[in-house]
Length: 194
Image 1 (cartoon, helix red, strand yellow):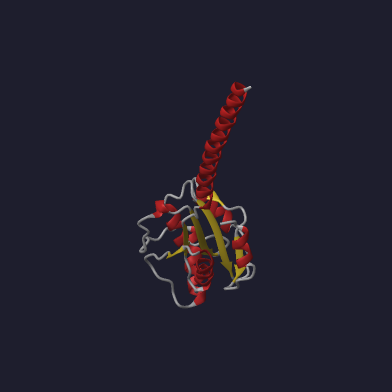
Image 2 (cartoon, rainbow, N blue to C red):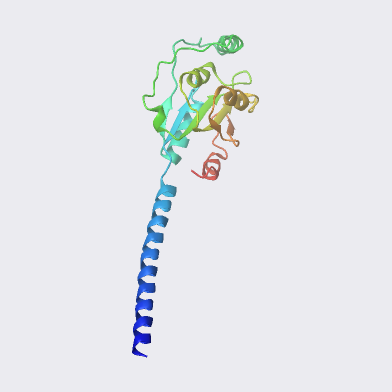
């Protein structure tokens, strides 16, 4: 009987030790997994803005997400007269013009998520945003479009952006707003699950 009690006690002790080791190993693996899940993505908000509307939306996104703001600037200017400006912009778009960038991001590889903003010009993104997409490799990155317009809505802006964004992971639910309206912007960002 003494041998049986001794063996039983030894078995119980070993089982408790095993459970303790397993519990600690499980806790560690859960912490490691949770640590990975808790890592916040590094966010960039890149945008081109002619009138300031897209810039205001970009700033609102930056305020809510804490991402880095990057204004796309290029060589060349537009006439002050609105009609002349839109005529020049239409001509540039039809010719596939890509102006040379004058602003630069040194560490594009560091970013996981890129909000990319453009006004709707003649049904598509601006030549400046096209230049940005031509100059930076965004493959494997999540790209989240946002578009401002003066009444034309989204039109081909998102499909054209997706076609020029080689290998990127395009968010299927972009944000589009009239002028500098922020209607639905905050809820849209929340629903992205960043």
